[in-house]
Image (cartoon, rainbow, N blue to C red):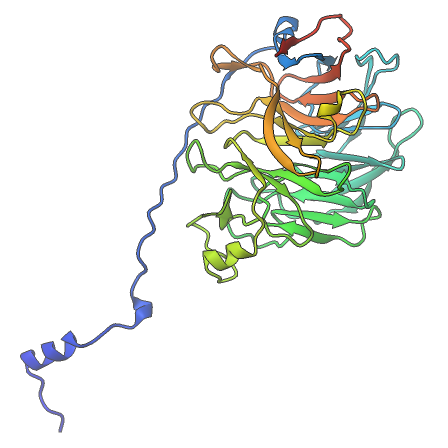
Length: 408
């Protein structure tokens, strides 16, 4: 017969009892989501405002095309014909400057499918990315397109970042950016938050790099052939976090999102999916080489390969900062230059063209989007907020003969 437990004896036994560790909740991690929403007033891009843009001495900026409806990504053919997408209407439009005076005379819609966005040209074919699809079409002699043939229709769902972009690498392969479906989460689809690599015929599709929240702009250094890109930081961490990341994108590299952000910070809401500690996971991720002001929204990036710009600007990267919507004081709304040293490594960000923010940052008349180099060495820059495409040249004013305001 079991002995009867008295209250003092029971208390003594309980006092020495330790509950299983798995029943003890972990200590709370202090963390607070925070942020601001601030959108400057939108103004038209009048000639006077364009003339007020600040560029380095000797450079000019002028309207290459205007009256467009939300021009997004650009691609340019060897003959100078440019193509621009409209992600809302799902169109691709041909832009032609036949007399080479720095201003488009002809615009013609050449394709339409839902959500067309990213563009890349190679060997007389235009490749176009939508949300789940990749198309390819022959470019005809008159600049129009043949039938859009489907390479893929099974890319990951869009979610928060639906703007796929395409670029051909120096290896002749096609690289496709697939942004994350969310601000910060553990993705179910292994192709989300990645850069994919595939052959021009659509075969050989694989994940090239992962842990990239939304790398819209990327390009290869003209000499080293190393791939660089700018990744968008997580929102709602305050005005100064998360910084935008300038990465060297390596085959097989993991760039930390969503567990490791910016220059090694731990994001407490998403522990490493692998089960590793933050420190273990961080040890095998790739840190950014540079960071830039949070929420600036880098969209387009191109290395300068031409001869028109002065030597000091060659082999540097030019980046469009589309502009913030979620910080108290706006950031971005400009074009910046990433200066590279002789060894082909990035040194620092520098302002290149500024002035789209006006009236003490209360208003804007442009949001730079895509940026490409034209065959003549000028840069073409789309503005999806005001329906304008700009031409940035050295030593050559626009058709009206006016030069933008120089910055010493």
